[in-house]
Length: 94
Image (cartoon, rainbow, N blue to C red):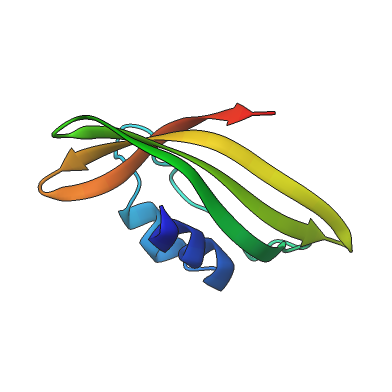
């Protein structure tokens, strides 16, 4: 989770796509499209292993766009494929 957040901060689309489950991965990302968020911080609220190959991570990521503060609160699902954890999908929380 933290490495994917860092990739969003850096605009590293290649890393994000490489760490996305192939069944849910978009064909492309366009992080350079304006306005680009200014990421302010990540707080991991909970990490729940479900079994050896599945886990969830609840997090809050804070950011600003055009001077206005926002927060992204999500429970993400991760799956281990070929020994690597990849992001499958997530549910937005208020």
